[in-house]
Length: 192
Image (tube, rainbow, N blue to C red; front, side, top):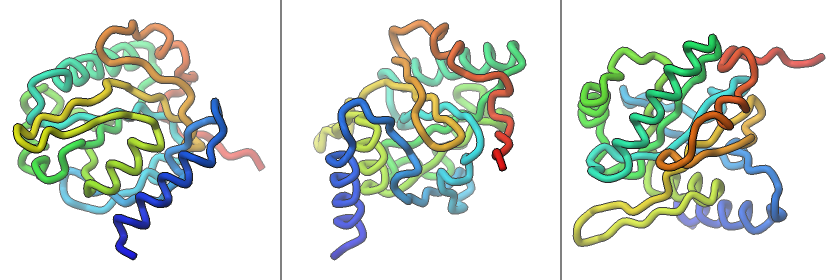
């Protein structure tokens, strides 16, 4: 059995076995991504921290620029409130989103010095696994390469559970901001 088939099978099992309304947990499936420098990273790295998670692709001319701008506003609002979060952005186009493309993306949106922003790239199976778990829908037009996708930003808790979400396009940020606990992405102390 190939790794891709195994990952897809695990994702389908995890999605099917999750009861309606049950909390989505990004740590439920082990996936390894590459960061902007090409170094391996897992979502376990963020365990114990609150963070925002969303999906984009760098060549998008539609909603991804709007999502990125909303994330910048979210980042600024949380920083101003003294409640900063890490922002984890996962590429929907791993074949195209190479380290140089990710660097250009950062420059284009003025986030080249934004140290709390993490842009992750995996293979197609990893992206599909995570998006299926989160019920984030997307499809790629094989002729044009355009990716049609949801525009959701998730608030992930220290245990990997999704606590709330918002549309990056048409929903106000207030409810999302209010859901971020005091301390933001500061590591959560484990109870003994």
